Amino acid sequence: MSYKSGLQFNDIKTVTGTINLSNIYSTVLADASGGAVVLNLPAAATYSEIVFIIKAIDISNTITITPSGVETIDGTAGSITLTTLNESVHLQSTGSTWVRLDDIASSPTVVSASEG
Image 1: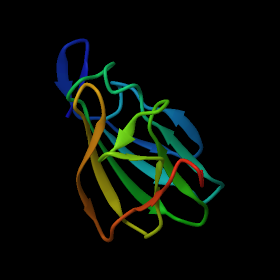
Image 2 (image 1 turned 60 degrees about the horizontal axis):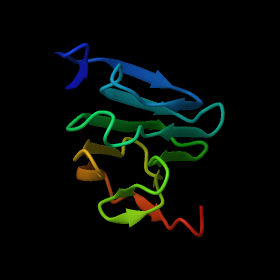
Image 3 (image 1 turned 60 degrees about the vertical axis):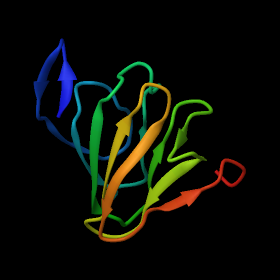
Image 4 (image 1 turned 135 degrees about the vertical axis):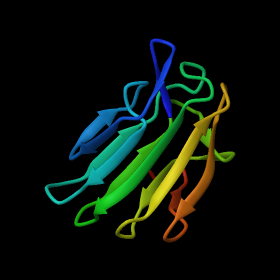
């Protein structure tokens, strides 16, 4: 669940391009059939404890999840790339960084900041 105006809710959104995630999203279906999908995470401090669930529903092109600025995901700088159809990842803000709670299908490929 994510938070909107202090209320918990579930929202599913299909994304086909670049988007800046915020508290209006909780579940994102990434559809890369028409081009690359880039999901930019907000600063972890902006939405402390928010959880995003992201699922790859088409992998014809790249699906990338990028933390804000120099923030990390599980202590690693750089982006996550979803490479397997139906692969999903749950990310939660600690208030200062992002943690991956689980991933389904296979482990997402982490691209180091120097590669991305």
